Amino acid sequence: MNTNNNTELFELNIPSNPDKVSVLESFVDEIRQNFGIKEELFGNILITLTEAVNNSIIHGNKTDESKKVKVSAKSKNNTLIIKVSDEGEGFDYNNLPDPTNPENLEKLTGRGVFLMNQLSDLMVFSDGGSTVELHFKI
Image (cartoon, rainbow, N blue to C red; front, side, top):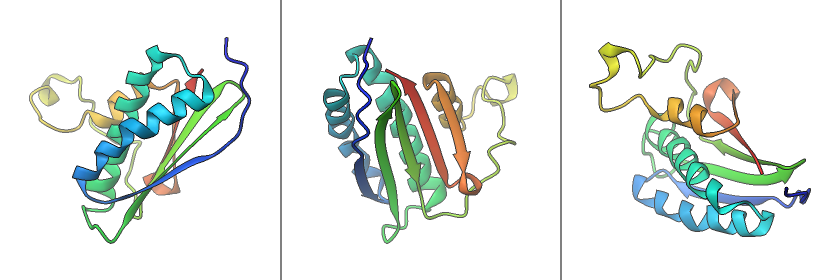
């Protein structure tokens, strides 16, 4: 069990361009190494963070490259906490269509928040939906 209670903060600002999401892999790897996170968690963290950042770029900031997506990560009490914030107006995260309903299965979008919720231990929206906090037990 990891007893690392290091609260060092890692931060990343990403322009609202979907091509810039590629920087997340090295960011997650740096976090994993610094906080001693098990290799098995790497995929879940990367997928969840990628979904959150893509949503922020596309839906929050409307791919306006003058707007940034802010990502921060810290470890506290054996939990990795990743926060993703955009400069958009937010959204009603309590009324999202269920991607597992038969009428939604063929749709090409609408699974990001569902995946984020399934792959993290806790997902908390704030700021009207323009910020999401993702928690992973490490």
